[in-house]
Length: 198
Ligand SMILES: N[C@@H](CCC(=O)N[C@@H](CS)C(=O)NCC(=O)O)C(=O)O
Image 1 (cartoon, rainbow, N blue to C red):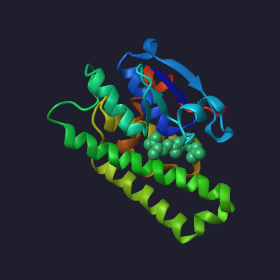
Image 2 (cartoon, rainbow, N blue to C red):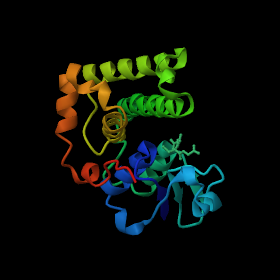
Image 3 (cartoon, rainbow, N blue to C red):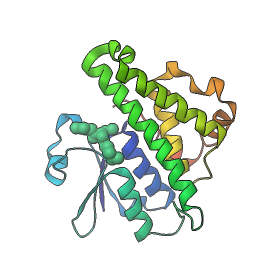
Image 4 (cartoon, protein in one colour):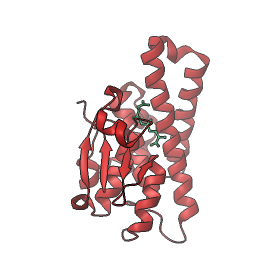
């Protein structure tokens, strides 16, 4: 397998953490790319030029973080991302977390296109509200345990908010979620994939 990712992409990080948690790191060839630079190698395998992109051993290109994790889960069911009997809870948690990531990435791209004024636009306000409400939901119903997909996506979402929008200081009003997040900081899959500016 080959994986194309950037060191900042939260979507790619979900896949990287899943690979790490499943102990598949040695079976994967890693390509660190910047999708915004139109990396030729990435463009060749994925016409969308986005990360994460996973190329399977039979040469199939897989895109979309959550679809890629489904593939990994089917091929390598040990250390389950979706434990039997907990699938609806875990998928529900993962959906909320990926929604936070979507809203945060939209906010970042909105600021890139329109400057800080994006935050005060109706769309910017809508994304902020979604992030706030989703965090409140997480505080009320904490994500489950690693390596469930809901927990992986939640760590990625919370770290991404800290990385890109530290001013949100989301943990201040959400002590349970803050403690849940703090307890995972030293876990190898979390530490080794933390976002860093290239
Ligand atoms: N829905 C996709 C989103 C992937 C995505 O937007 N990745 C960003 C990096 S965070 C990217 O590659 N952007 C480049 C572009 O949109 O051209 C997923 O879940 O994998």
